[in-house]
View 1 (cartoon, one colour):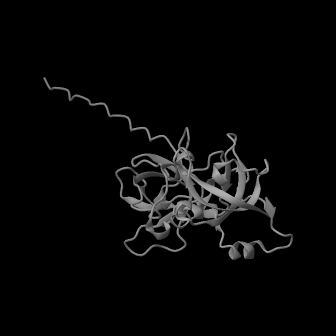
View 2 (cartoon, helix red, strand yellow):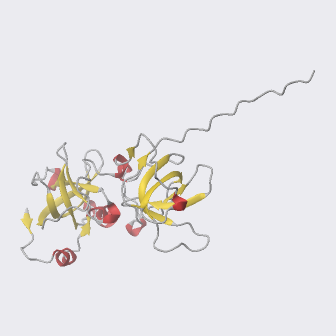
View 3 (cartoon, helix red, strand yellow):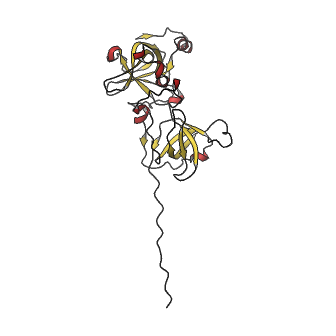
Length: 258
């Protein structure tokens, strides 16, 4: 693996080779397909999982915790440092034997070390379908979406999935209440060219009618009249238990007058 020359400007270098962040390569898959003879460059933080799979983790705030699978030319295992490090990976998208997407790498160049913005937050398998956690209890201090004023944890019920990538999940304070907001999860954005090449494990698997909690940020300015606010999650969501139904009232029989 090569390395960026000492003292070189990283931002200028990434711009000169038209490199995109790891998860942006997913969203722009339509123009980076090996079978079409296309190729490009993706940058991020390398991580070798316990099963030996090498990942390139996205370091941008909009794709927190997400990453892409890397393989060498012809599907061979990549020789990368066990400790990982940051790198640019030149390659293109291809399908592996399990029909999953992998970034087939032709060249790697190491980038200067940088402190991770989310230390210890890199899961072994960083794909949306495997990132949704389970909380044993509902967070006590969580706010309903309609009351979010600054970055905080919200507790919400999903009303509907996004109509298309980037639209956001329709969420509410209560299952039978009115919609409160749209929620955009990490990595979600409109797809380049309008073609959705995402696989099942690259979509968030939230279920309408289920309850979740996540740290979210409100929009910078109020929405236009009649529009719902668009909230943005800064981490993977977690499923939480449904609220217990209120105790049923005991029916009492009126005493008959004699």
